[in-house]
Length: 380
Image (cartoon, rainbow, N blue to C red; front, side):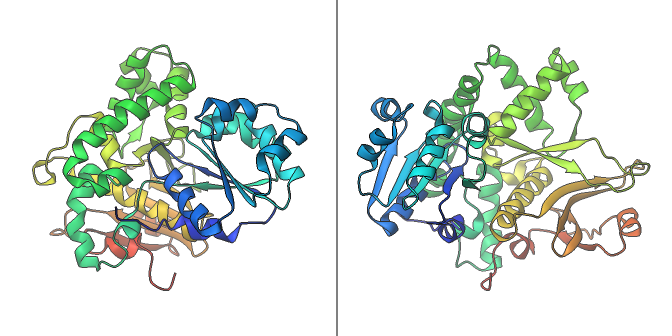
């Protein structure tokens, strides 16, 4: 089977053996275990502990220092897969990092919600966090030219970039349907013991149809006939389980600019299309522009996670309804981007934005030039 290099591995390697635990989070099936296997094969002398196994959970729940010595032995690297399944996981990691300073500990988790509840607080100052996303085009096609990448777009705009379906494109629809039914829904429901799965299902569909649009919690609560707090909690849950993310509005002048609204986007186009059960060919779809915008912003944010995690992502709109699809604030300053699928029409970034922020750099991203915007260059 073909192997792909995950770009985040370079970042992880920089922080090995710095007396910190390295925690890798990400949705199920994005390749966390495969990534750790790659790291283990290169490091050698590694102990692998799978917290999905009952015996492992039992032995690692509230252990003594002596018991941990018996488990770790002479290993230099210890990997704990799905650590959120271990009771008091954060205290366990704290104990390990504080008492076995020569050993490198790596852990994975599939829910930021559970990880934050059980790991992060006790581990203050003792860990580095890495987010593993579905594949990027830079990882899938590292040697292809921009023109060749453009030819791959139609498939990935519909089916996304989850690792398994990227290797089995002829089975993409079935694999995505299984992914959403067996992992996405199941795990989200179990994590917080949600008693109304049909409500979560309806909310996901509403968000999928509104993808890339500003979302009103009040309007969603009216459509679902539930309290606004319930909708907010469910969206927060979906965000922390890596299904969606919110893009906030950029503003420095609240009298003129929208400040409180957010757009909801999906980390993976394929998951979104599976939710609405629409895998029609891109050529016959009416949501081509929305799919392209969601895909490009997600790809850009993956790239920023490798190159400059401090970069902040937004959209922009004023009260006169002038808007910019995507805005970044990073080391090079402020940038605004229009993201357009249609290459036959000329677009430009809103003059209202450039008048307000004359020093901002601006650009229009299309299928013809997206590769430079979303893919790592050879010198990076």
